[in-house]
Amino acid sequence: MQNENPIRDLQHIPAALQPLMNALCEVGAELAHTIQRGPLGGALGASVGENLGGDTQKALDVMADDAFAEKLKTADVRWYASEEQDDVVELDPNGTYALAIDPLDGSSNIDVNVSIGTIFSIFDAKADGDASFLRPANEQLGGGYIIYGPQTMLVVTFGKGTQEYLLDPDSKQFVLVDEAVKVPQTSREFAINASNYRHWPKPIRAYIDDCLAGEEGPRESNFNMRWVASLVAETHRILTRGGVFLYPGDSRKGYEQGRLRMIYECAPIGFVIEQAGGLATDAQDPILSKTADKLHARTPFVFGSTDKVSRVAAYHDLPEQEVNALFGNRGLFRV
Ligand SMILES: O=P(O)(O)OC[C@H]1O[C@](O)(COP(=O)(O)O)[C@@H](O)[C@@H]1O
Ligand SMILES: [Mg+2]
Ligand SMILES: [Mg+2]
Image (cartoon, rainbow, N blue to C red; front, side):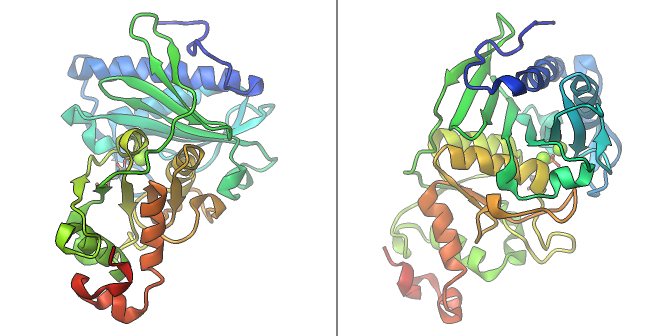
């Protein structure tokens, strides 16, 4: 499948970034096809190694990484930083851009036919590879993701709102379907891996306790819970119907800063969410104000509808006796 322009509607994409975006989408469309063929194309979920973050690499992780790195060599990209590579790789010494990527997000869902994705972040290239990425997230030129689900979609921002494109299975082109995506502000859903409850910091436990207490608790309202275990799928749901996502730091060894990686997961998702009118933090401070201190650095991550993300931050400012109080006594948050 070859299309001269994998993206049909280019009007929201800065001209200089169009070759890069077309390259990303060309590989994205090919990956969507590979994923749809599933086991007919080989054992996509087979374990093939381990990356620097200690995660098992699946065949599709490596396949996706190879495909993006190869295609981006001819798309004006100088520096390539991938979840699946230990160090920054130089693709084109004359390239203008630095691209960070999670080639395949939600790897644990490959074999279970649940939505997975690709997350990417674009900076202008500096002379040094590492320095091109170890900088404030608010210097991103663009950020977004491709979700491979029942529909394959591109969601991206270049700092002027968030746009959404659908891969048309007939024309095999990404077609603009929403030029100003907005995070709904009214929602009663939260997403967190609740199996880690006992490891969470107290303010996170208190926030979730109060959601679980429902109508009888200080929120005086019932909540619903979701956990897909694909960051792209959680993001897409929150962009569509609001809510809040939390992956906090916790007391497990290696999880002090949570699980998600700053440069190629949290920074671009935070950019997309903020441009859609939501908020993204490290549980307290804006994610876009943060700078990673190393390529694969992790960070706690909370994002979604503004009031909910602000409330999570506010729980961190509660006096000790309020955080420890049973929900019925957490007076500050009644109503
Ligand atoms: O298995 P856990 O701890 O619930 O973590 C799930 C999270 O891990 C991730 O799968 C990490 O991404 P990768 O699959 O790219 O490593 C996220 O998509 C997801 O939000
Ligand atoms: Mg990921
Ligand atoms: Mg990944």
